[in-house]
Amino acid sequence: MNTHHDGPDRDHRRPEGVSDTLVEALGSLSKALETTERARGHLYGFHQLTGTADLELGRAVELLREAGHPEWAERVREEIQGRDVIPGHWTFQIVEAYDDTYYQPFKALERAAVDELAEGRTHLYEAEMKQARHTDRPGSVS
Image 1 (cartoon, rainbow, N blue to C red):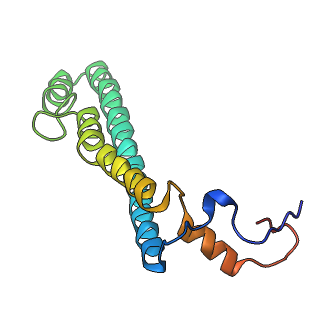
Image 2: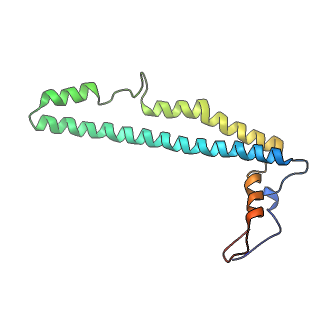
Image 3: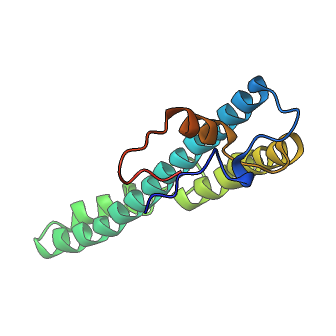
């Protein structure tokens, strides 16, 4: 379906009085937030992988006991299994602190900047880049 239009839709059109520099600044702010979203995803990956490793340690403890090495089973259980990843914190607490202290405030600030400076219109930089780089190849949709 080729529905090429003359420029971005209203929601992605630059409001009156918004300068090139402001569009670029908001684009940079948005890109930084997108990078933070990726970092947050990695943090959740860290949380899940660490939890999976800890559960597997429980299996290792059982198997060490079964194999006749209760002293090693107890050492693994006491020294590593269920251990804080940083003093006083399991990974879920790190995720919560990141969300509360950094991610949510960043997301709110980016939203407020777009609302106040660009009438709530998101991705202006990308929409204008799409328009500038768009070709009329089959399958291209504006």
